[in-house]
Image 1 (cartoon, rainbow, N blue to C red):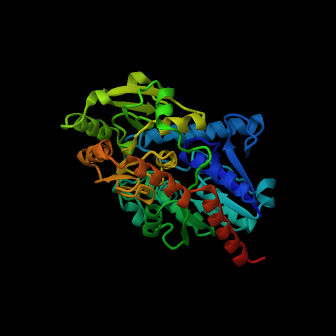
Image 2 (spheres, rainbow, N blue to C red):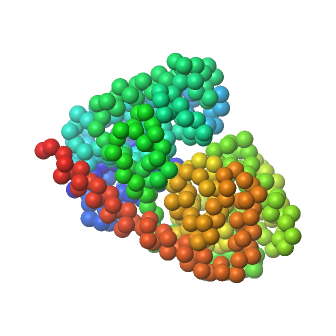
Image 3 (cartoon, rainbow, N blue to C red):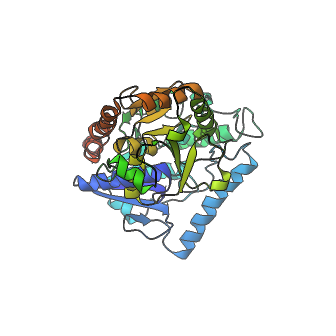
Length: 423
């Protein structure tokens, strides 16, 4: 069975990483799987590209920059992801697609595939699978919906646009998608139950078949290390209680919930029984130290970590990973932390409850309650059953998200689609 995966970038962002991980898992399970991307930042044996020569690369860069920056003319806040889907490329003549048995679409924004380019894929007469890593496929442009329900109908009156109205850009994008999707036969994969429920409520995709299959993770890479030794690697005393959080965007970026993290840590620091000097915060991500807010605990900034084995040791050094995101499909950081036997404290939102089981392998705080987020951290700080909780964190990933489990679910779906597809 030959499978080709389509993604805009090579391993960048959550969708890119999830795509590469699935590709690796499928190959390990005996399938012939390959990732084809719109743009490669560097040559890689793991991926092929549709932009190999200088002309194609230049066109790809133009599409990417145009999609990323033209939106600023229309959107109120460019930090809230929104795509116009004006630029794209017809890839139907590429040999990798003609030779494939299954075409598996992932994240295809930033000028890769417009709605009409997606519709053309149906002309290849092959089963098409589409994994939704965010909400953009079934909205009029936004990737993160928050509480907006306009996608239930035909978008329009978009709260993200400067010139919002019944016939605004979100509605026009919705119309283009509606026309294209009428010609596109595809089976949707939702990595979380939350995403599947969202799809079913959408006017664009609600009638499509949906399978809930999670993303996977390399459990042989993201594995537990001895905490005392991992802390020593980070020059943190073994007796310290270590808090960890991931990429820190600006305080005004609602999507990642930074303001709630800051409020929760300040609340925690003021509680009786909390020894501020016994707690250290570790932050990793690509935000410069100068842009970081003030925290009530001693803080170590790790910067960007590009080596997964080193990242696993960092997770292992933590006693708790805090994920304050307000909307996320199936965040890699949560899965990575649990796989390294580090419990997670997060809001009860998106696909996070698919991974974090309350008071078993972590703590699910009430949505947008910084106080409850602090309570979750405090629970782990005082809990004498920490080793059992850590073991359960690791076990939950092995049982439901390992490469073998997730690859097998995808292969079963592929075979079902091939069996039903007219020869």
